[in-house]
Length: 184
Image (cartoon, rainbow, N blue to C red; front, side, top):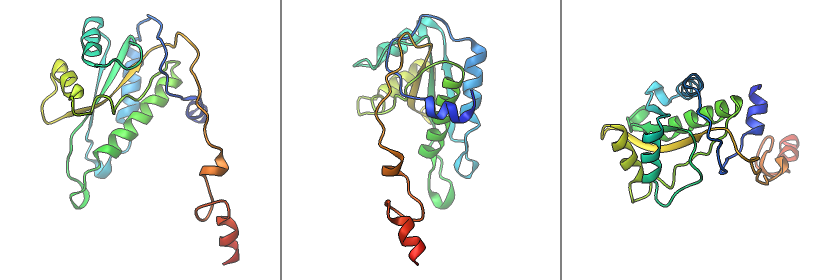
């Protein structure tokens, strides 16, 4: 699958997964895609953990209360470190966001489905920290997201997106921006 097809085909999948293991070679490719993402000031704040052990997956999913979606046969946990970079700014959110998008595209490109699950585990109830403890993650890293990975057991549901003309413009904001730019 070429990259534009993967971008346009990707959607957040919240359905059931087939009970078919994800080969470790495919998980490695997905991790490589995540680690290939850009990193602010090259601080490389992102670390990744692929989980494909059924018992450990069960324990991780059990910590996610209330449950989110269906249990997939594999999971990728996204970790970040808040490291100051340019002018004491930290780009960890941008770093892990880029890594996650790369992995979501790789997941679709390899014929799997996933969903970016973040807000639910970074709330005050510290689900991400509980997951991190099960994985032996040091306190210096924060588990900010997990991606369930597996073959879809049902067709993905596509959401309605606003039109290109409602969200993309040339030479300024709004559909009239091009007219204003040419009048200058």
